Image (cartoon, rainbow, N blue to C red; front, side):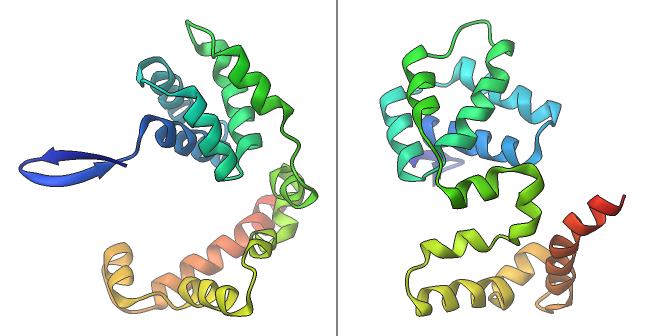
Length: 170
């Protein structure tokens, strides 16, 4: 994070490298949205990216494949080329079986997001993660839904769970 001052208050913003990773992942999740594709193209043309740090952070977050796929998609929109060594490094990455399940558009809905749990090594960590998802703090509920009641949260969870099923029927 980069510390800044906004109206006299200290704030933190994502570094250019993390911003680029965030935009790639968000675009991958919602591809092909034109506005997000343009956001990524504009960010690539204007952010002072440290490409070595970018590659290091993409590897640390284990998101090289979706980042590569999105950079490859927007490369044709850019007036300048992405560094070839960056694209070559990302292209060399081979995702694990679990990552491929999540990355594959048709298989992703079958996984019910379960492959993300394999990174939570202990039962306590897994339980803590699930409890935070299923029973969030009241402050979170107020911030997101405007009320401390859980009904809106449960409707949202149910909609997320059913959206792949409904999309296949529609």
